Image (cartoon, rainbow, N blue to C red; front, side, top):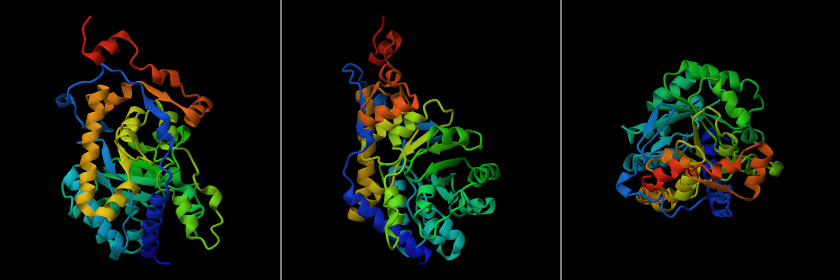
Length: 364
């Protein structure tokens, strides 16, 4: 099977997952404590976010998806147009196909051609050479580089990698060799606290926890196997909410993706400590069902609704959501207990008199 055929298979199987999702994930086990006098005025709300020295107009991005075939190149073109018109950042899919076959360069280059002034991230795997990492950045004039981690995808992949021991050292080499911020991301199985603490020492700028709850690439790769005999790896890993809780105070700026279904999930992830929040499969489904205008409308609606949620919660900026009180329920609460995460602290973040006065705008 050619790389282009595999990329097209990934899109087809990812869309099938979108149509079979149950609709619930562990974001539903995170809720805001409602303070009825916390609201502020909408003109006082900003969506701008800053993390790792990077500033975006909004804390939302179209995360890594695809590229490497004619069909996926057309998808990248449409995604780039939507990102341009909406003012959100965008990431390319893995550019490994380009390293193997430079003739597919245009399927990635289109991300910059259609979005000349936007924030665009290149994407490589942890086995990429430093030269190839630079090639990926140069091809799309990337503002940042994502390095993806995907052992749970590679394991059932018929042609997958089976050598993971050198990944940490190679991430460190790439981070030292390139001139843009490096963001290490999972592909949907989550980053544990131990992994994030290890990344702190590798010179990367940020980590995208990319947890369980969205597109399941282990399931996709198992679906490409003749016997589909790795079904026990379906739903492997930690949810995005669990990863953010696990990584509290880890010292590395965090991004969040994986299972983000709506603006409330965006607000939840920001409240759990993410600097920005990405989505892939849901945006892809909107694009393929309704075209570029539908995706632009969806992105605009999410941004407007996120601003409305910030207004209700009294958060002038996305970062202020991390001061809101949160309740953790169900299995996610059990995860926190086992991992030593203090959920009481999360539930009482605005409980001091000074914080309440600031939240309500009152004076003593």
